[in-house]
Picture 1 (cartoon, one colour):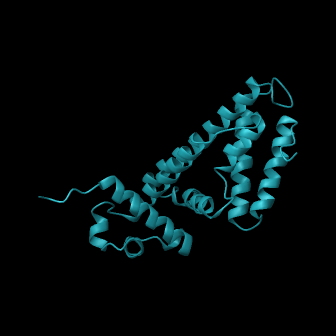
Picture 2 (picture 1 turned 180 degrees about the vertical axis):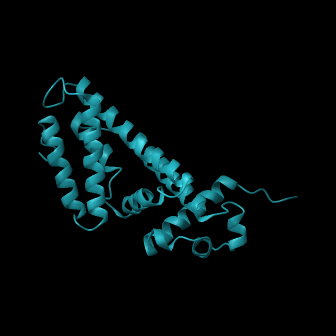
Picture 3 (picture 1 turned 45 degrees about the vertical axis):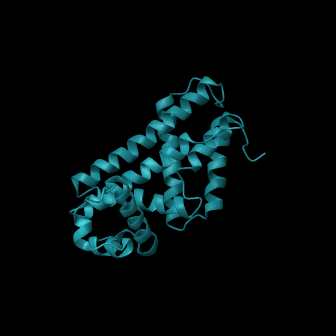
Length: 200
């Protein structure tokens, strides 16, 4: 009887190997050979699933997006609306090793997406998804009368939130902010946005 292969599970295993290589060597360390070594597969077996480095990276980044989305959907909020927004945004920021690796993969696409259409597609999905998340959060705050000033344009506020979160993430990934400093700056931004001190 032929062996049944779970291809989705194998692709997830390969994505985990990509993350392992990136955590150890950075994005520049990704190659068919390095991921094959990390996964225990041969390069030939790996090419059955991903024929190019770009395909491998694109898949790993989409896995990150899906992983973060699942975590956010699984959150159970016990505080007020501002605390809920804070918890959701922190799921997207490098506050621990897992989220730091996720951030490294996602933001590697800033440069990589400029020269490769497949990577550019994933980059657009990442940025569009993050903006749409910020827009939903701002709209929810507005509906709950939780913004410091009413009547502000939701799209402009969402773009600002997106820029703040991405900016703080990049600074933390580059070592210009510690995780704690990044969170402190996020809390200050949320206090300005809502008038609520989430640290109290």
